[in-house]
Amino acid sequence: MKFLPVIGLEIHAQLNTETKLFCSCKNEFDSPPNTNVCPICLGYPGTLPVLNKKAVEFAIKAGLALNCKINKESYFARKNYFYPDLPKGYQITQYEVPLCENGYLEINGKKIRIKRIHIEEDAGKSIHDKADYTKIDFNRSGVPLIEIVTEPDIESPDEAVEFLRMLRITLIYIGINDGNMQEGSLRCDSNISVRKEGQGLPDFRVEIKNLNSFRFLHKALDYEIRIQSESLNKGEKIETSTKLWDTKRNQTFVMRKKEEEFDYRYFPEPDLGALVVNDELIESIRKELPELPVDRRKRLRREYGLNDEGARFYTFNPDILEIFENTAKINKNIKKIDSWLRTEYMMYLKENNLEVSETKLSSKNLSELIELVDNGDITGKIAKDIFEDVINGKNPKDIIKEKGLEKFDDVEKLREMLLELIENNPKEVSKYKAGNKRMSAFFIGRIMAKTKGQANPKIINDLIREYLYEEE
Image (cartoon, rainbow, N blue to C red; front, side, top):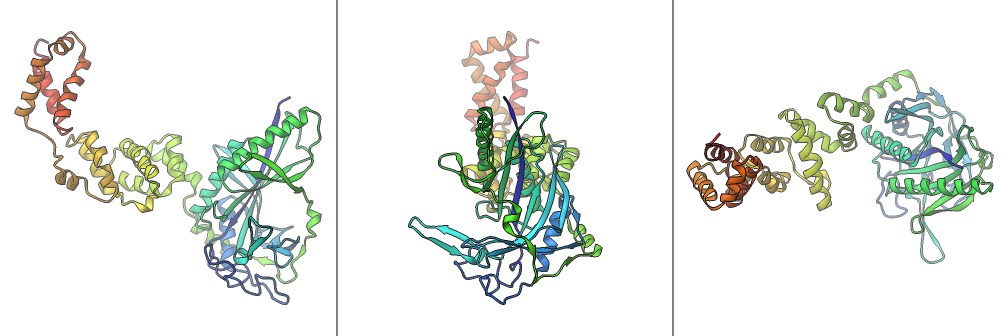
């Protein structure tokens, strides 16, 4: 029997504030272990938290970008559990009334509902040594997070990955998260279960924790869907549990039986009052929102005639989009701009393992390179040969001059070359005159090779017409 997946995601996004959520310690990723700590984030008795206003503003910005209702009054709670990297023995989070709720994010024309976005503090980091001990780095303890919880609206691993990609780029656009999944500033948990077609939500779910790449998310969901379907087909019962993804064995394994909410013994945080925000603050933050990825993707299709693949590419690569749009302001050949950026430029970045910020490609130079080809001043081959220098900030005309690549326009010399080819290749001439006009490529190619690609193809074509069209 075929089963359908039911998927919901829980995404933890660290906020790009300068300091932690409840103290003035630096919010910094690569500091030496246990240097950005104080009695508050280490959970010393008698210390009191002071809420970071910027973290609240960033959380509201996320809520607005994700079409959420912003609750003007929300509350903090203590989530009680014990783990070595949680020094207080509880985590300050939001429970019954979060800051943001009832939103959505559109992907490929479908709205994935967002149940809630709440603020919480991060735990420390456990570093498991090969020996029988674990090191604890508390620099991350108290770093501000938002947790974004979806409804179980996702119906496939592909859809889950697309949602996470769109969410990640949205958080980057609005400037509250750097999107670095490898460093842990964006982390994803997935709830997955399967059901028979036509049935409601299953009475079990498996949570897969700490999926830190799109590839691992897809593979873990694929695997879990398969084994759950196989178990149900055998008549076996699936228990609710928490699992981890084993990247070496490519399979999930049970971490622990899933806790219920009452296991965390939530209760109101006594050291923090209600979080109250007003309309003025919400509207001021709304005005700060940039063009969001969903809207940008639609605009790129509308304004530039890009297909969905192209619009998606530039939406997910805003630094390349900046080059594209600036070039389009001075050169209207959109197809050529798009082709150079999505093929030649991307190939160069990939082959050299470079980021856009590590190159010096300017819109002015790219536009000039395209014009030189369009005007017949250089061939496409020469343009590709000099593109690396253009990427590194050199002007195309200067490169052509330095390398002696100027267009070969000497009509008499090109005439001599063509006449020599005609004399020495009678079979090819006969084929051409017999109607095989593709043979013109033979003559053009030979002359291009002889002039190292610098001959003016327009002059060659005119000469071919003069000498090989004579009988027409």
